Image (cartoon, rainbow, N blue to C red; front, side):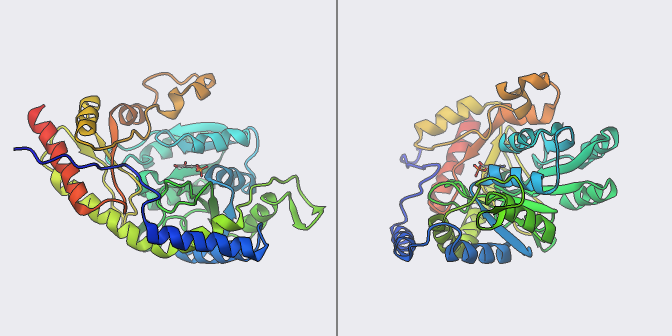
Length: 374
Ligand SMILES: Cc1ncc(COP(=O)(O)O)c(C=O)c1O
């Protein structure tokens, strides 16, 4: 007999009432302070998050896309330069590259991890002569073969930016995501592993000149009020988001731990299902943002799970090179077969501290039930 239906939401951001109360107190503290932009909350959050990542510097930024754009600007990526990006990523990685006028050079993923394939990166580095920088994305929270990739970047004298928008807390060889590259960015979009109550982002680096440059660029190109040294932007994060993120940062390690335990339930439950692929992580610790499976029967599985009360999402249904926005690149179907296969077959299962282990076990049971019958 099948188990009774249980609701398993993909995400619920407002149900931890104790936390909501703490966050409301943060908002009140900021409102009462009368200081709303680039004040003590921002400084405090930057110091805490820099420590969390193990980098010398951290700057809060309006959002992850802006942080990526500023990282490219600070590393002096100019129109006509080439930037290597993963074919399997969220489109923000590509957009930031387009916004600085650089040429996108996509590199496909390894199917085992979903992350950039270092062998293909090496080919791209050898065949493209104007590469200024590589953006490596730690998609789903998995950090791929970063040591190999860092070595390749050093060998070819190109900068490495980590897009760690989905990897707050992943550790490889004792080093946190964000501390490997010349610069790294994070997103605090509400649904992220560490999320604001609005938009937010950060750039971390241990290179003083990158820090100084981004600090000016995010604030009208100015160090001293009304004195403008470069053509800057307004890409600051506000005090309210900083106060909230400092509060939530204190819970991040325990939330990541819950996610890791949930993933081990899924992985154990799925080992015998030949029709289901999962992505492997070889990190010391993986801060799973998403748990993504791959199956040729995605639509069937998705509607079966929905009938059972289980919400799923697709990250992401269209590979960047096939999206309308990048039609002008003229990259046809088949150009990046692994990214295309992932886009066609991937499905994200519910994960996160809003769920109990019993709900994860229910999802795992229902996935098994589906494949036993199909
Ligand atoms: C891999 C990746 N890069 C960049 C971003 C951009 O972050 P944001 O939405 O804060 O601009 C996101 C998140 O949306 C992301 O998942």
